[in-house]
Amino acid sequence: MGHNHNHSHPVLSGKRLLFSIVLNIIITVAQIFGGIISGSLALISDAVHNLSDVISLIISYIANLLTHRKKQTLEQTFGYKRAEIIAAFVNAITLIVVAILLGVEAIKRFFEINEVQSDIVIWLALLGVFANGISVLLLKKDASHNLNMQSAYLHLLTDMLTSVAVFIGGLLMKFYQFYWVDAVLTLIISIYLIYLSWEILTKSLKILMLFAPEYVVINDIEKAVLDFKEIKNIHHVHVWQLNEYSCHLEAHIEFKKDVKLSEFDIVCEKIEVILKEKFKINHCNLQPEYQRDDVKDFIIQD
Image 1 (cartoon, rainbow, N blue to C red):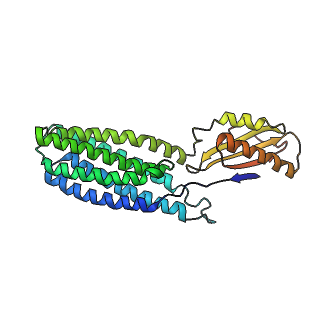
Image 2: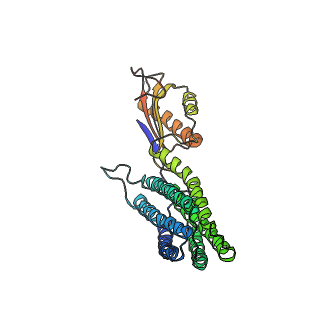
Image 3: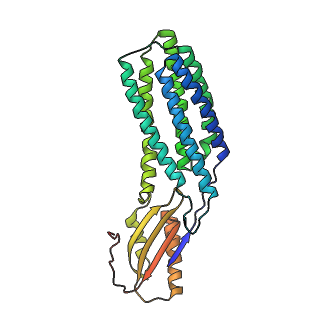
């Protein structure tokens, strides 16, 4: 049974993530107390959002450590390579739940508008913009090539934008007494959170469910393998992602002749090259067959 693998992926900076966690703890504590004192639902919403970010960033930090420090063992043959995907999934779920709760509270606030101490809102919103802006810059590079870091990055980016909106709302309340803006901002923030989280949720869920990646056209794999004159059939095919960087394929390939093991290895290596170059599949597990009495369907219904 032939196979190849190449699991290399970028090493992320845990120190930058840890610094972002500390900043978010400071923002959360300040905004919770500020929101209670000022009576601002938007500020409390921003604080709750930051609290969810603290939890999510801690999960991301632990997942990052597990992925890069824990190796495969006899009991854990894949190690912790899916820790980051699980973290991204949990992060997305957390954001959606928080967004729904905020939306419900915002709708309630429309029916009982209260005066807000806008000065506290303005200054704490500025603190949020500053601190989250630093965190966004720190994680931007890692977010471009890692789903877990992308999830953490979006948390922080959303926090920064939320703080900008709260700051503007604070100005409107201070100079025009538009206290209903507090509820409007909260509702907009909740909708925006759901929008941002949905893609990460679905993408991470597909990986956890062992779906084939979207960039792989399964029927094209069959055509590419059958182009080899030695191959009669390819069947029992499974394609899945272990994580963002590692796409796996296993399949049975039926030969037209009873080839030697050395001949199979030559064909196997050629197939691996094609699958790597055309389909970005970096781990192949191919089982050779000759006149074996089994089901020859391309996708077997297990």
